Length: 560
Image 1 (cartoon, one colour):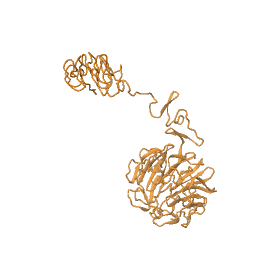
Image 2 (spheres, helix red, strand yellow):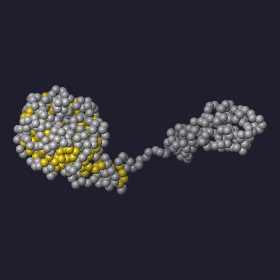
Image 3 (tube, helix red, strand yellow):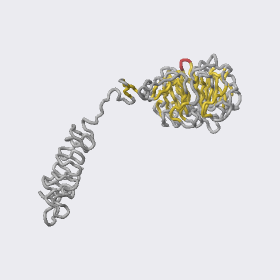
Image 4 (cartoon, one colour):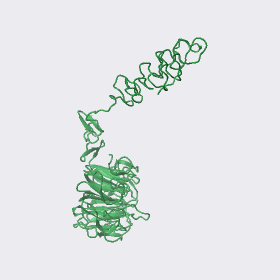
């Protein structure tokens, strides 16, 4: 930009009009020759060839006869010769900084083409800057070698990825070690290889593949995280006072674990006695149930818990729909009463759903030796699979199914009188075929419709399923290929297909090709893959574990 100056002359004697000495002043802020063709622009403008004041209130010669300026006053902030061409501009030969050079050309903003501007405002002796404050040969990104990628660091003479290298996790030589099994490095943090995974309505938990310490995250309003607080956690938090677990399960707002020492503990919501410690007081940390040496496996339902024993199955907690299976609707805050018709229950161990399954207000077992399912509890949507919608207080056979490999029971939130808004059941049978029954208001049965069924129907899944889960209103399966398919409600992205579009037939989860196990919450889903945990869906309570409360419609790694 140009800086305007007034031109005037001084003579000895009486004051005369202020004007250029020679030749005639053709306007305001004009050089002596030629005529001023513009304002503060041009190669010869603002540069008179002889005695002229091109600045402010400072004549260079011959004499100020006004009494205000002595002849020896050479001005203020202005060089005396040959010319002041503006403000903060070197005298000659060129303005190489701010406010437009006189010659030869400004090829950019604030950057003359010669000699050179090497950055902001002024520079010298480097090749031309043809743009804005960026010289052609300076400030240009260059390849910094093999460690230029994010997360990489030179450790000794080798470039290491400190985000994934267990020998240099987070920084050089930080080795991930554990006494429980394989250790991994994810996002620069060490953790054990994930094995067990269990989702409640709005919280999630995982334990190491070798049965290591438990971590939980998400809603903690009832203490279901188990860290001695009720603080919501958006990243995995260590469960207090538990190491080396054999089994892990989560109910609506409570969590249970079986340790190597055969200690059975639960924590979280206990409003219906589902913790099993004889009280109805919420527990913020693991609380032992008692001497349960005959117990082999257990699962958490909406607000009740069940376990397989040598004598059958026992349940405790809420019983308003007969979900304890003891022939009554009386709640219990301790184990003790056996589920009727459960004496032939298969007593197994391993993956969740291989022996027992629990939904929001119903439960199922597998009988031995046919592996046929029997169910009991709430049946308002046909979720017991016996061809009716009558609640059952004892274990009742499902119509026409044997050889079940996995059980998956779901259920929505309860209404004002304590009933399910929706509930369904799915199983895998020989060859990994999936069959489902119960509520289908969002397509959670996967048969291409939204019509419920009180008897099993085939889900339209192509491929053999090796693991299965049922959420509030959706269902997911892990195929033998490691790919994951889901169907049903998708209002929170819980199907993981990159949309929020409801699906009445299975769709593939984006980007998961190596999943091992899967678990469904009310409106979110998590899977283990290569020892890590990825989650998607509702994240209002931080139940995805990625450090945010942002809902995700594709799998996202938890942040350890």
